[in-house]
Image: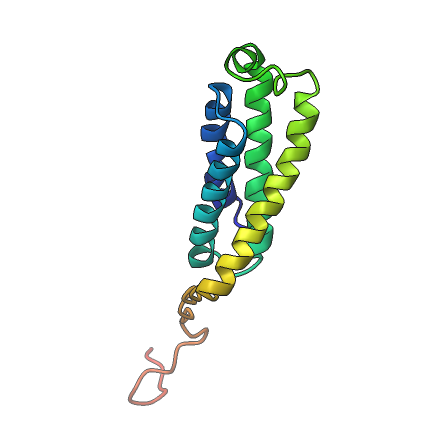
Length: 147
């Protein structure tokens, strides 16, 4: 698993966390997650050769956890900008469950993108290294030793 790529792509959770704090909720948030999941999924087959679905799930899970943390840390601002029905104390537990759903959504998008785009290009192998011979060959012109 390419964890650098996973953490880089899961940074969309920061964007969605900020957007949810300032009022993005309901069907607009679902559309935004679908667009972000599709964009991430379109990026994965070009950069990952194996475990694409696992990468998609990890990206979605981490992004969902980031959103939950933003909502928890900035709960006062979240309550001010969202409906009272959305802002309730059980929000952290619901956000964790939502992050699992988001992870599954990203994994499904990644699987679809893999089927559409096909497998990624193979990484070129490093050329074999040639090591010098252990015993150098005898000098040309005979094997006589100089005194």
